[in-house]
Image (cartoon, rainbow, N blue to C red; front, side, top):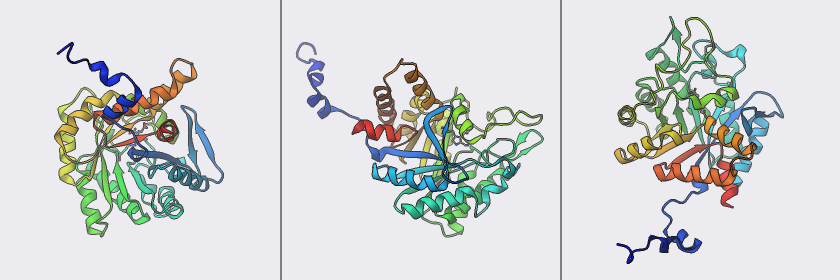
Length: 329
Ligand code: PBG
């Protein structure tokens, strides 16, 4: 009790603060999302994500080498699919020579030790911009799971270490795990987007991949019938526990900052590693405020990342990964 205890003693200089600091951010914590496009020599900035780019495979090689040198050892791949290859069933997603499959091989070839995770959902491949197959205005569950399962096998065949289903269909983790086992991919892991909310923070990502739901009759305008209602907490635990039962090695909560209460809650409930995705809209907000001169970029970035880790994240997927390594020096 005061005055015997004065909490400020443990804050009085950087040396003591660093001794008692509970949360230490390191390059080991990060999973780096990468956007891949067709072409050669392409490095296009995403308009709503300043200083973040889409790479063609040749320049992806350069980027991956740079990440590895910086101590960033895991990537999460996304591809932008040309419109002419999109259809309702996401047929291109299972093309063994598709862009994703070639991207996996490119990364593994240039940097075999880099951990490669791949996004599994139909939206970049869907002519309707949905994560599953559409029929009569509805997103079909079991039919979509079948394609997502084939897609996962195709990524495993190309050399992915982990598949990361981001679609929120019911039962997809079990279906994917069983298929991986049947095909002998015992060591291919699953990082499940377990508690993925129907969030307005995914906008810039959908710009990056041109993957937003299209505005058409009989196509749902949003993803609320599969992604979770952000008002819900218990549902996040149920989703996560089910995914673990179905075979998820890592579970994910997404987005990040607005959902740190959920991260802590799940951390207290489960014993598998937890990933948090600090999403595109969170990135865009910081960049926009910094552009206006309203926030200090590096200070805000490291504070947010530390908060995500403090909440319970073992793994952080973030567009700021390279910035964080630079800031940490
Ligand atoms: C695909 C997917 C999305 C994100 C990751 N995987 C978009 C969505 O579900 O609409 C969002 C990532 C971000 O905003 O950074 N299903």
